[in-house]
Image (cartoon, rainbow, N blue to C red; front, side):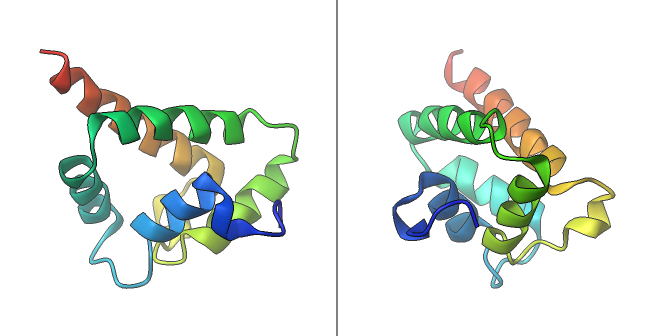
Length: 102
């Protein structure tokens, strides 16, 4: 794993808090996140998720970390590597923030 203390890691908190085993679907979880979280949190999430994706860790380690944190998402169903799925989540957050700016 990337961090010994995952509880303090914002990426862990985001993934585990949003995409836990009790979600209906990943899309529902994203929609709930976009409705319930503040604009400021979503902006912060873009930053820390992007920093994670661009970090020096190998893609394999990042993929394993994403999979372990987002345990409510069956990523093979998306036909994407976990890191690519997370990039799509970031895109969805960015799209929702554009609505705030109107």
